[in-house]
Length: 166
Image 1: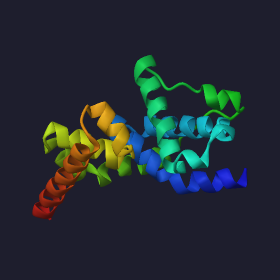
Image 2: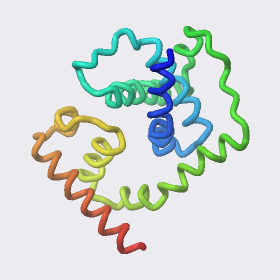
Image 3: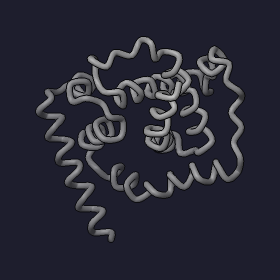
Image 4: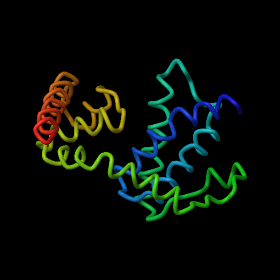
């Protein structure tokens, strides 16, 4: 359990940012983060280190939790209930800290939205969602080389825009 606590400490902020970017709400991001970590703990025995890095595994779970939330219209707490975790209670200070994550990335979010659609989707998938080039090539229906080119061009465009705004 101590190892999972360390795992949590390493990835908590990144996972919160992931959900904040997709939902724009600190309270919802916290709820999704809690459910993702509970689902990860619940399925830790199935984790195969030889199949990939832990971050990609965790963010794969996060994408499923987010997808389920959009489909159901609410955050499921099934994994938390199975593990007997207490109900998530957020203080105003906690929500404010999480929402600060939204503000930290506001310029980047706007810059990302200004990219051409193909570059935006490639950058979002590779950088923000930590998806592999192979996985993106399948979902974007192009080759891995094209995905790499889109990510490269998109990141260059983001860098140029952010440098101009400084």
